[in-house]
Image (cartoon, rainbow, N blue to C red; front, side, top):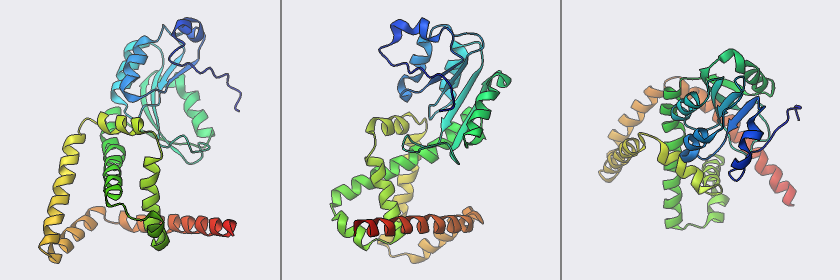
Length: 261
């Protein structure tokens, strides 16, 4: 819609790769995590002024692979949203600088013009953050989904009695299982420290369960206050933000109920 000529290159098109890439100005790698480096290595020689970018949710290894493959401009991108988002407006895109920043500035400016919020980060620091933001979050949601399926409660009954906040939490769990299992397996299993983090989470769960079995409310309150202190003033900010989200969710539910009538 912005007037750029776009060519989609799929896995069966390698025979034509030299022709397709011969005059490319921008090549964006958007493939599963586990094959990203291999796909980058198979690229033909790109024009010197061509920008090589990727959309992988991990950045350090893909960025290294692109820098090794291409001598021209290189940048790592990570859109922090899924394919069901209709546009870039207010959506976060992480930018990890690679080489010749000035040559891909037009791409950065274009993302901004489309409404994206750009967050510049170092690749290693980004990957470390993604282990918490994505890998562990998806893993714990996956485990909670397994728990729900094993308990086999009546979903209609849960929804009928749910407060807006629990309905939203249940929706976020269900949302995960409505999507591609391979994608989430790649995100979780590709995280470098996921086992250590999952074991630490399990340790916290075991400790909390011990307090529960011992009916130790004092220990619960002490831990609760410790976490509250860690969040600090941010917890108040989250309280305000969550109220806005809950109101939006409540309004959407009301509209749906009216439409069904």
